[in-house]
Length: 251
Image 1: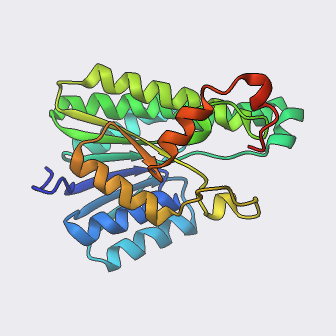
Image 2 (image 1 turned 135 degrees about the horizontal axis):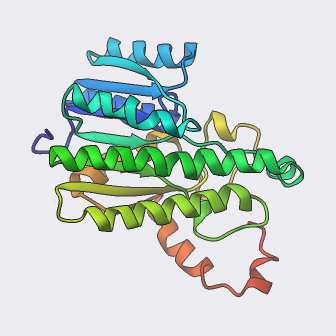
């Protein structure tokens, strides 16, 4: 269960090597979170992340998880929930892809869509059902401002995040009143390993800043969190820019 400040005692991260997810885990473990499940493809990076959280005093378990293997989601994640209640699920896996390459390689583009959207739909529904069965918990979904409006520079990635965002909003509405809280997090450009080598964007943020916003959102039981918060106003304006004008914007 969560404490009076909304901090979960148990946490499941889908995408156990995500910098944003690990920054969030460190913040929560520094408060009261004691059990962390890191789900991801087995790798030295996953084990290193687990050790770092163990050094902070958490009971950490790694779980083999592949976003593209939807058939394994129900048995793998269902087994975790059978071992005890999970207070918070952070759905943090995803890939950026390479827009120029992916336009010329439909199979690569499909992999972006399957990872960011199809895999998230499968894992998200499995976790939502389990959270509903236990009668409490939060499902936090890492979306992106890229999903707010398709841009020429990354419309393949952006479209996958648009689908994820719509799915998470609808899931939140479906679970309203059940005791399960769904929160959609929309960061802007995040300086991380995934974006290394890319040109910085206005109002760029960091994994630590996103983690802080997630913690605040949990405490407030927010449904949507923008990082930074000023992006809410910016995207509201960009959403209504006529397409002929939007095409000429350097975004």
